[in-house]
Image (cartoon, rainbow, N blue to C red; front, side, top):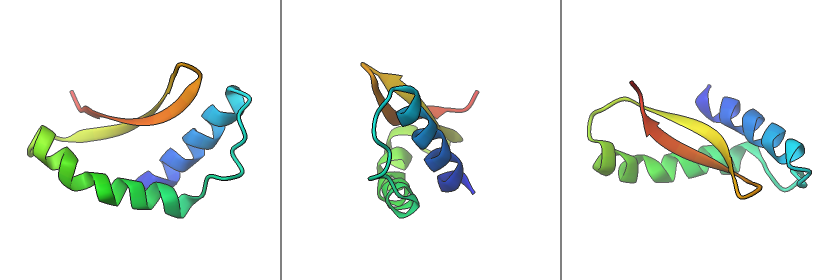
Length: 68
C-alpha cells in the first residue's frame, strides 16, 4: 500500500543521507498520511495527488504533488 511504499522510500532516503532511520516506523507514516488527507483535500480539491519522498537540505521529507 501507499504508506508502506513511502516508509520504504523514507528509510532509504535516511540511509542515503547517512541519517539514523531507527526511529521511523510504518505506523507513524500511515498516521501522518491520514492526518494530512483533509488538508490535502482542501488544497488540491478532487485532483489526484501523489506522495513522494524528497531530500531537502539533507533531510528526507514526504511531499504531496498533483498528478499530471
